[in-house]
Length: 384
Image (cartoon, rainbow, N blue to C red; front, side, top):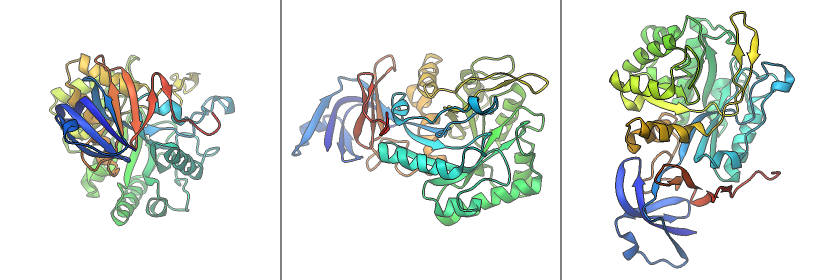
């Protein structure tokens, strides 16, 4: 199928003004002002967007594709996410991972879900491992998972959390080295995503690894870094060294967390390179609340609508649309080495969203096909 999206206000994420966009198959073939006057193809469908905004599809690097939770017993396990729920929030690419529970959930099942979502019409990858060590894997080793499991691009581990495995420095460096070597050999990212809790040890192991083991700071992606004010202060220090930090989009309340918009403003004021910051949702993961005695007092489920909401909130706070897009599109794709993702350039995948003037979602396109329109998801799980 071929489409000509006419009169689009295009952000690649750079502002390209009003252009026409030619989509052939699943790729961006061309874009230019008044391109419609130059193009004549059999079977071409022209759609006049009348100046609506077109941006890259959102890339969410922290999604519990097969559910999460379990901190409140078996009944508190959250369900799998469905493709229809992903695209209705403007997300076209996801990275799946495990959390606390790697006993009743497994990397092999996560791999199957990532492959299913890719078959259903979006793009999905996965991380092996979980909170604990030895890291649960598909093949028996972290290195082999990254090397040989097609959709696996890195590892997850938990640090500075009462649910973490409390790894030694040597164990931590060994895992990071395995990720790095597997990434080099496979051409994948080979990143180590680190669930960060609120314990006083915070980012100690990362600073030590960067200093004593010469592992590049870009090898690590600490996430949930706006969980507490002290943790975020250390995260900004890490980012100033060239390290990467991932903010969780849902942290908007609580006495000690840093509101996501506030965190972005603080990073900008501190002169942090915007290429070193991303946002993710923790979608379908549980959000347990623990008291000072370690007892769970409440639990919720993270939603994926936070990325689009953060785009809107950033613009209201004074960020340009281009600035607001960077941590939820191009940065994620580049960090994770996701081919042809994160930008709307010639040769890239035609993953895009069409927004109204108020930045509300009008349409989602994935791989050159409209998958959400008129408030309805046009692709669904086989059993929905």
